[in-house]
Length: 209
Picture 1: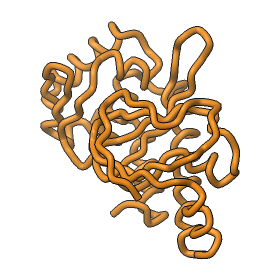
Picture 2 (picture 1 turned 135 degrees about the horizontal axis):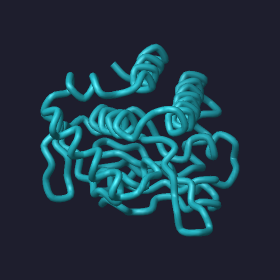
Picture 3 (picture 1 turned 180 degrees about the vertical axis):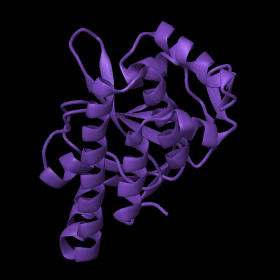
């Protein structure tokens, strides 16, 4: 187990690559991104101190079909695959925990897909910010408008409009390359029901408090 500081944008696992190590965030967050041949990308899940990167591919012993990159900088624990796999195979409690986490990420990805189709950019950005601060353990999110555009699959101009709408509600303060959540309750008022489903599911699975 090796502690490592990672910066925003660092790529931990390439799309299509075999899993050689897993990463357990202690702070900050990781992002699962699906990359396309035209250069675009879409985020499917956010991973914080509750979880681990590349988990479904690790459990399946298959190449990772998405990219894992650092969304919010912080500290991670890097663990090589072979000893962790041996430990999980010998420890039923650990294996159950990993399977529950994998289920939670798959459910988050499914909820994201539905949310992207049915809900407004304001609702989706509010959900993204709430998930980010929950998993990073901080009300300040170091992120650019370009990063948010990738996460939501929208133009940067749309992100700018939505951020200023959310700012006008008093929920956030905007800084250079960062968003500070001031009034969580106001952000929760703007968000769609997807955030509540994410939060309730992770809590019911015993993954978060």
